[in-house]
Length: 106
Length: 121
Image (cartoon, rainbow over all chains, first blue to last red; front, side, top):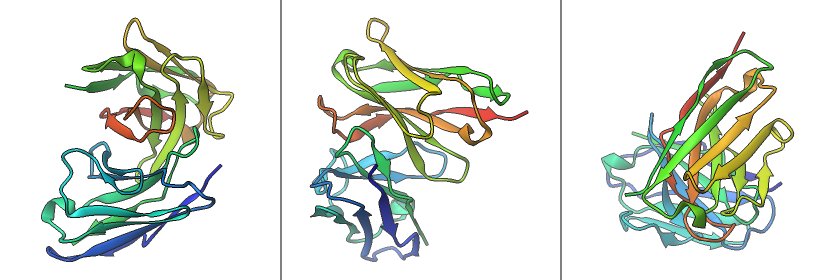
């Protein structure tokens, strides 16, 4: 199975900051990489799929990049609503796997 | 609007069984693959199982293979997860999630709110 790692595991930011979260796959997943946001007590929501495509309704301050094994989620100007945990997920195989998550707090 | 609503969770003793359901509405259920994902208290997301749109193909995480069975009834727009030989480490919030597109390699665009399974003596 494909293992996913994320860094950092947590980060502290301020409103207006630009932040970057990294995700790495244990083998190539081409561009089958998705990002989810989860707030406490809520189900995850899809932010970005296919490494860089913004899901409908997601603000354009979110962006994704990468191909193969290394990927990045960027939030260009952190907003109060963005404080949450972010997970990457590979969908290159029928056996999905998630990264361990990155908690973004104030 | 698209909705998926899980039910069937509860407290169960180790070694016992439980069946979860996920009722879908607002989309053509029979066109989409569906997944179960779980989240242990205070932990991250763990993919559990996937079933193709027609129910023919099922896939499982190593941690549940041989104990859990995923199924679906497209006439009832419902997804199921039969969980046997439950262990304390199966304690989690169980989500059902819908594939975004028609293929097998899609992200999950809709999630339910989850149903809690607690395995404890």
